[in-house]
Length: 565
Image (cartoon, rainbow, N blue to C red; front, side, top):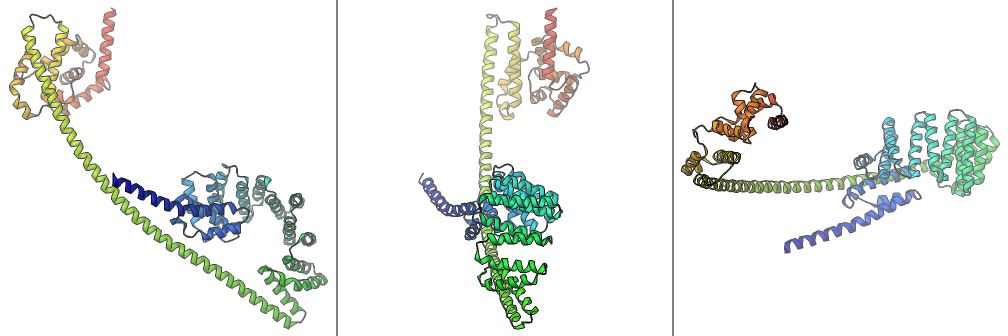
C-alpha cells in the first residue's frame, strides 16, 4: 500500500513540474497567436523566444507553434523556403481533424512555402485544402486570407480572370475589415489593368480610396494612392501616375518618407523628360535623404545622385555618392549576413536539440516496448497456467458428475427393476427414461478416461446389462429402436422423403436427431470422427444445411397434417 502511495505522489510531483513549464510556454504561444493580426512583428519576437518547444509543449501545441511561426514570418515578409516543418504540421492536422482553423492555417502556409519554391500546382492543392477547412469556420478574416493568396498564385501564372474572382471573394469576406477590403479593391484594379479594361481599373481604384476615406484613415489613403501611382507608372500612364503620387504626397504625414516621394518624383519626371522638375526634386532629395530610414530608398537615391552628378560633370560629388552607395551596400550586406547567421545558428541549435530529443524519445520507446513485452509474456504465461488449472478442474468436476449420474442411474434402474410390478409407468415415459439412460451411458463411456473405465468396468458391465436388453457389444440397433419408439413413424418418414440416404447416413441422421454429438456417434458406430463428419456433410447436401432442424420441422408438419386428417 505504501509503495502505491509513494508512486502516486511521485507522478503528481512530476506532472506538476511539467505542467508549470508547459503553462508558461503555452501562454507565450497564445500571446503570439493573439498578436498576429495587429502586431505581427511582436508575435515574431515571441515566437523566437520559444526556443526548443518540443521539450516543453505537447504534440498538438508543437504543431500550433510551427504554424504560428510560419504565419509570423509570412506576415513580416520573411522567406518561408527553409521552413519544411510546416508540411509536417499540415499532415498532423489533416490526420487529427479537430481544429478547422489550425488545419486551414497549416495548409495555407504550406501552400505559401510551395509558392515561394515556385511549385505552383502543389501550392494550389494546399490552398484548396485550406479553403475547404476555412469554410468550416466562421472566421471571415481567415477565409479572406486564403482567397487572397489563391489570387496571388493565379496572378503569378497570368490567370488574371481567376485571380480577380479570388480577390473579389476575399473582398466579400473582408466586409468587416475595411483596410484589407480596400487593398483587395486596389489589387482587383491592377488585375483589370493587366487585362486592359480601363473602366474597371478606375472603378476599383476609386472603390478602394472610398473605403479608406470612409474609415477616416489618412495613412491608408496615402498608401493606396501610392500603390495606384506605381500601377499606372508600370503601365506607362505617367500623367495618372503623377496625379496619384501627388495625392499620396499631400496625404503623407511622415517626414522620414519625404526622400521616398522625392525619389519617385525624380524617376517619374525623368520618364516624362521634364528636366527642370528632375533638378528641383533632386535638390529636395539631397536635403531630405539624411532623414530616411529605408535602406532601399537610400540605395536608389545614392545611385541616382551619383549618376545625376556625373551627368552634370561634377565627378567629385559623383564619387562621393558612389562611395556612400558602396558603404550602404556593405551595411545592408552585413545586416543580411547577421540575419542569415542568426537563422543558420537557430536552425542548427534546433536540429541539435531535436536530435537529442529524438534520441531520448527513442530510448524511452525502447524501454517501454521491452516493459510491455515482458508484461505480455508474463500475462500469457499466467493465463496459460490458469487455463490449464481450470481445464483440469473442469475435467475432474465433469468426471465426478458423470460418476454420480452413473451411480444414481444404476440405483434408479435397480430400484425400478425391483419395484416395476408395483408402479404403473406409461410406455412413453419409460422409453424417454431409457433413452436418457442409454444416451448418458454412451456419453459417460465416451468422455471417461480409459483408466477410470477399467477401474469401474464391473459397474459399467452391470449397467449395460440393465440398459441394453440386447447384444451389449453392438448397442446401435437397440439405440435406433428406442429412437423409433420415441418418434413413431420417423424411420419411415426419412426413408420415404429421402430414399437416397445410405445406410450409414441414415444411422448418423437418426443419432444426430436424437441429440448425440459427433464423438458419441463415432463411439457408438465404432468409427472415426472424420467419417461421421463426412456423413453429416452428405446429409446436409441431401436434406439441407442444419439438417436436424429441417428434418424436425418437416416431421412435425407431417404429423400435424396426419392429425388433421
